[in-house]
Length: 168
Image (cartoon, rainbow, N blue to C red; front, side):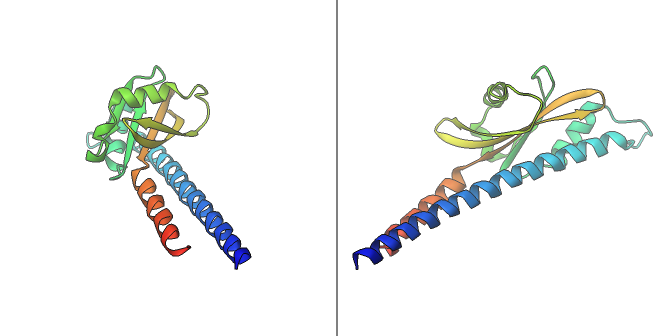
């Protein structure tokens, strides 16, 4: 009976950590997909002409793409190479994340040449941030896609609770 209990505990712990890793990988994959969709959208916006047969400016393309590629649980922020906020799509969920906090997070990515995923803590809440540099015309811009990890933490808490109830 003791050996079976140990095996069941090992299975439970392994299952929990595999579930955690799967949820984390899905979050990272979604953040990367949103960043790629935004980059494609803003480049497409820049290529297309507006109604007056004039080319859109970079600012217009960013503004239009930010409003088009916005999601309920994600925040998109675009910065210049000088770390100046150009545009941001903010949902009600992200009222806790100020532009200053996002700009501070931007400074936490020292290598501005490659996409990086990182977790930040702000006012007791955790956020997963995808930093992605991209070119738009002749300019290098920085994209932050931010996602609150609150739902993930709630889900993992429920899974832990379920394991604690059903395993013993």
